[in-house]
Image 1 (tube, helix red, strand yellow):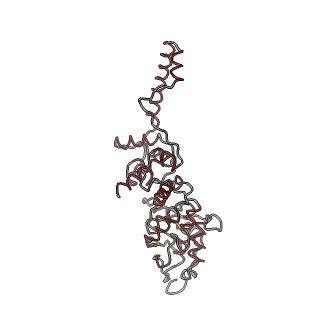
Image 2 (cartoon, one colour):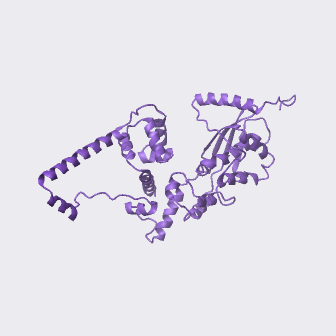
Image 3 (cartoon, one colour):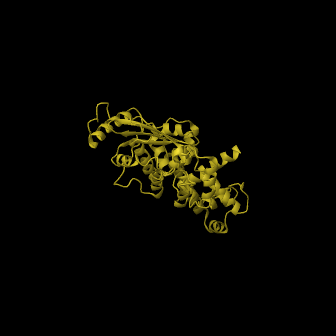
Length: 361
């Protein structure tokens, strides 16, 4: 509102068209745009997304401004919403583009410890947890209104560039509802927002499993242990000195020298062909690295751990074009990783991270 009366009404379609042009400019300047898009009237469709929205609505401080926020998020006014550690940054389209900054206090250590203990024994599949997918049992604990990860009003600091004097304006309310919609597809962002590491749920689960097995919390996770813990079949390496079985000795005895030589030659040809195919199997290009990461269903942090680089380095690889100019160590690591199955890759990430944590203690 101006000093001389209400500003002229601008239709939603016109505002969205103008916002789209402005966001395109920001994208061209290198900004990664993450809009909130709602299909239909329902803002959140999973129980954890709905739990976030319900959590907001239970606070009397927010009640007056929330309805306008619902309207804004439904009509696509949240042009951008990014969640990082303890922070939400967003851009909302109103009479112009407004910038919103929301800061969330980190979760108290004792509260996170209680969440970890509650989740132990509730995790359906640790492989899914490593891939950023959470079972309903875990999310029910995490989204508990009192004991979970949702912040209280006193832990939320709100700021919007609009001229509205209220701490929670309709633009901020739209962003908070947008968080619920985002959690529908990326529930792991709730852990990031409260500045806690969801992978600590895995270590808590491992502690419970090893204690139940009666072998102590510091049991070494060898290949056989990983097979039982993760439900992954890990092949035992072949011993170089393995003796031939009775069946193989019998076969060789019955065949003539000519047949044996022919068989050996065929195996040699097959082995050579397999080796040559393996060398040509993976060419480190930006598209190939991105495709490999997506095949493993990993986020940037997990895949960077697997390859032995930092997440920013991985991001540079994926944002490049054409064939990557890599160090030999990185090239060899990518080629080796490309030969793994998704389950083997996830298990290897877990092994590396457990080893690092053990070294830090």
